[in-house]
Length: 130
Length: 499
Image 1 (cartoon, each protein chain N blue to C red):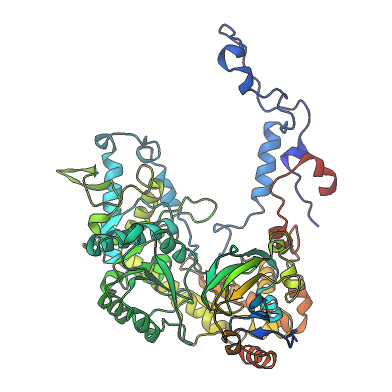
Image 2 (image 1 turned 180 degrees about the vertical axis):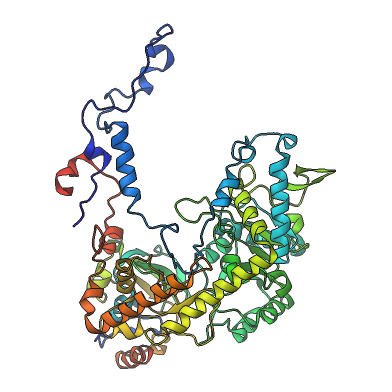
């Protein structure tokens, strides 16, 4: 089954966020990359862009389809993983590590607590696949 | 085993040529007098393939036989309406007066062509129930874009323009099952796209629609009907009423008109503007560069904003009329893809009203027949009877590791073009099948038998499906590598590794 690290928070749109202070690192889950299939292109925002939670901040294109990326929390982009331009396959091979997508300065206090824990996300993905 | 065909560059033989110039019978002029040296290449056309005429003809004829096409068999590509392109339509399009007409011919020298445009406009208006029409748009997404521009022009005239040329009303509502071009068209016209959810039954969620319309910021709704899961939006009248009461307009994506022609009219449902695809519904060639044609039909309220020129009556004859001051302007050079108009008019006139209705009924019946026949083998996410196309999923087969892509590839081994896969996006592992009215009972049965055989293989010998296709010149292509590291052109230095 899919890999769900304990130390991260999860959204219903299958993004994960790891938090240190007021900075969050965002990517998509192992479950999501598996459902997407081979990722061939990742479109990411620019540093300084601001997003509400649930707002689309980019897209991932797989051989099947293009899917939107949604912000798990409101925030401002402080860093973007440029290496995904040349190596989108990292989303498939290392979704929680080398394929982090953006770092955000979280602008909404307590927003992370509204997300799912690893255990809750595991139940959520099980319910979604039946 | 079959052998792959080498490229013309690889087949080149130095000195071989396909022509011989006759002896010069005029005075020779120095090239320098005609073309300055700095504009000429000096490499003696290094690397250009050198071939004889038979070399070229045989090469292209051979590779043309590898193609799958609508003249070869059923092409059940959902949402694309790949119907037969009749030979009569082709013959009509090649009548000298149409085929050889110069695009800059004066109105009086082009009366026949103008009459074709005028009459086709009349028939398409009748079919859609929408009186305003322009045949200019060159394809579906272009017609869609034109339709949204009409909405924008109408709203700007009614409500005024906002700050920085922005629309006063921002939101263009689009269901989550929509074609990807819909949000693109809305965005290009300055609107913000807001997604409307679908219900578990595959219909537009009316509660969600009402909720968003209550914000008062709604410019319009872009709806495909039947929608992309092949279901008729039963609440279409109510949907249009909700959007109209909120001050917005309803655009209908006409991609699926093959389920409605001669039976139901979008204008009667409350739709304000629609585009048609002549290359789908009206049997003009689709794919391979078509070219397409995407007429845009609208209500009398939107008519003043239609593109110019428009073809109108002029006494006994016809003329291009440019005098519509509120028009959004021209959207296509000359007057659209005229060759498609002759074909579409030929299609409409040879069928007549009863024939068009019969074609629609046959298209729906064929899809329902497939829906019924395959329900025991494949998971069908929506219970309602489909219209002209039906969606299945790979849910049962995926338990054995066989997915939609594998089933599509295996279908090639059975001699069919695959169905549309992984669309619509709201259905996981979607297989969208649209047989059209152009297939007979036997061919539909062969398709059903093939799909059933694949379902059995997925159960008993899954590897056979997972590794398909087996009968083609090239096996399973690495689509991920092709997208990640595309090789876009042949290069001489890669010749050795390609062999």
